Image (cartoon, rainbow, N blue to C red; front, side, top):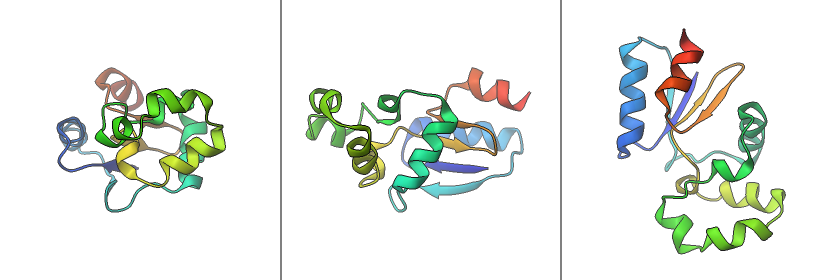
Length: 116
């Protein structure tokens, strides 16, 4: 599995502790140092089953500074994917990527259902 996170994020820390408590094997990747590519985001989005807007970190400073709440509804999917690929801090985190699933954000119930 791939665990994409921001080490200073408390939710990411909780998710990583959750994985460690279950002795899960994963590769960790710092989203700020190595943000997801547009191709990765497209693949992960397809696997996640989520609406594209759910891939955005709506609590982030970048999201607010760019006024994305107002801009996203008028942007094409291609424009949104391209924008997400420019800065890892725009992407909802943590991201857990498995062979047949992708989770954006940490919801313990969802993650537990995958590992039961």
